[in-house]
Length: 256
Image 1: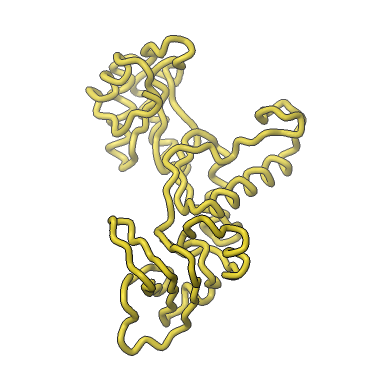
Image 2: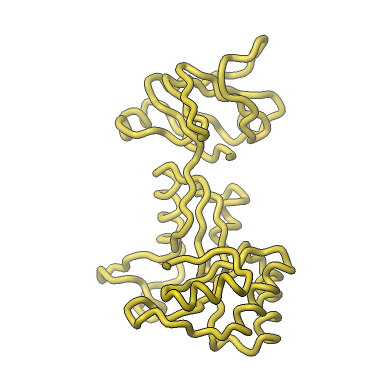
């Protein structure tokens, strides 16, 4: 994963002494990470994400990509950032999070009518993204909110610190239309830049979790998602809804 922030190793060791440090938090600036010549990070222990552990290993980054993990390459002359006793591991992935949700000044989950201004909401979302990155997460799956787009794109442009965000920009449910209308709405999400399609196929578990979308609706939504190259993520609690999503060719079921 790309390295996103500049930090000092002294600050990292003081504030996160007991935790492994994600590669995204290494001591490398934007210019150095994306420069033509490689840079290196070394630490007491490096985990490569496949179960292997390397003592005093070198992580080589070229143009924002990790190209090798292990011994120092022969003839390497680029900058080396030594994280000392820290443990370095690949960035973590949060597979389900709502990054623009936050607790407002009244101590409750923010809603559109709670009096918070758009600026307050934008700052809260940016703060959530920053905190997520500091926790070691470098990719975040955020299914649901149209507001994700601006945050995702600002991070991608390097204007804000945060993890790479994959978002559905909204959702579909049994009230989203006929099968043909659902297909069009999937295409609309694709055109708006959605990374995934989110589908509510059941009630909440608090309401019994029963299936709400028809089999034809599910087949239309998931089939169209596949045809435009997007994953179809289905919110399903009850067994009938999960089974219907599977038979419709949907890619993944959450909240089961």
